[in-house]
Amino acid sequence: MRGCCVLPFSFPHIAIGVSHSHSFTIHTPTSKSILSSIHNHPFSPTSLHAQQQQQPHHHQEEDEESFQILTSVKTDYNHIMIVDTPKSTMLLLDSSHNVHSILYKDKKWTNSYWDEFSSLPAIVPKGPIAILGLGGGTAAHLMLELWPALQLEGWEIDDILIDKARDYFGLSDLEKTNEDGGILNVHIGDAFIPSDDLHRRYAGIVVDLFSDGKVLPQLQEVSTWLELHDRLMANGRFMVNCGGIDGVDGSTDPKKLSNDEAWLLNAAIKALLKAFPGQLSWKRMPKETGQNFMALTGPLPDLKSWSANVPSPLSTGVMDWKPCEIVSGI
Image 1: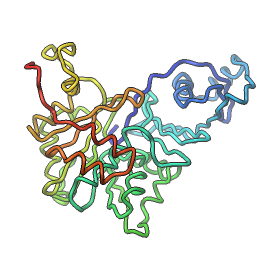
Image 2 (image 1 turned 135 degrees about the vertical axis):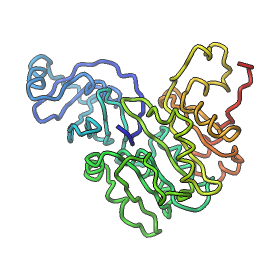
Image 3 (image 1 turned 45 degrees about the horizontal axis):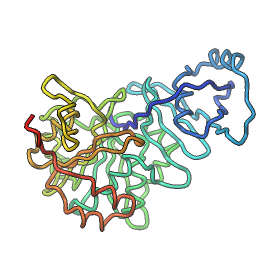
């Protein structure tokens, strides 16, 4: 699967009571526990009925949070599951049931890496911005709220996923030109296929491509980034969700790395640095939001100026970007 985003969670195991309608009540206020419950249940009528007989229902209304499976379908690329709770709608993909998109019902902010992409328009030229890995459109929602005149182009390989995102994540609303001229144009297809029409087209490109909870292997290849770079206009930038720690080989001893060298534990960032030497910055999200590595191409921006041109909490978060440098002589 290509074209979705992953927020890795570690889910505790809990038992729940279930019903044939795929509507559930659990006695915990956290979405992590909801996802733990889903992770431990195959959703067939037989298994649901058996689980209902095995698990007693509890009645602690002050603690309970209900959720419902809105749809569950397998496609050529994904196992799509969309979960609705009183506070949010979540897109789960693959057997891991990682969260690939989330839409809160009272806000666009997610307090996670999706928000980071909305800082990109402040440091790129005027022009369209592409999102490779649109998923349910989490990043697009906030980007168009903060930058209502933005021209977004979202790429997603799974047409059924796009249909579901239109039904349950308000994607179709973003595909209509708003009063400021902003819009999301959706492209269904393989984002890696070369096209002359894309030459120097984008001011910025957001890259958020995963499969089975891991960054696509193509993003660990220098050649991929050099080919995608052809789509950026002069002074354009990539902003990339690089996932977590991976690709560690015998030449990299994590114990010998300084805090400023943690990026060496991520294969996608290492490939990006080879493609754009001296032109790569990085940051790592906090532990409570998944510890994803983020990468930004081009010269390190003036952080104070960048901070002044984006709203809080982005104004604080952009100050964490730093250049990829090896300082310990590894």
